[in-house]
Image (tube, rainbow, N blue to C red; front, top):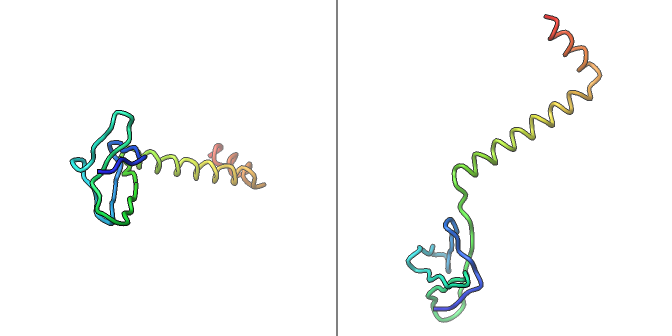
Length: 91
């Protein structure tokens, strides 16, 4: 086992030499770093993070909101926007 300067959280995805590592293969140290059993030679560890559904939903809603704000700001700068808004409220 080799100690690595990596912190693994609940949703951290670790891939060693193209194979995904499960929680049972990871030993956590009191400092926060981890140890993983490795083969002799060159090893490549890829670190990723799997977002939860709530995080993805929040990101999507934020993007839609920013898009709506941008559209409203663009429409507010158009010269006919004031007349369109007045006509809509008078109907």
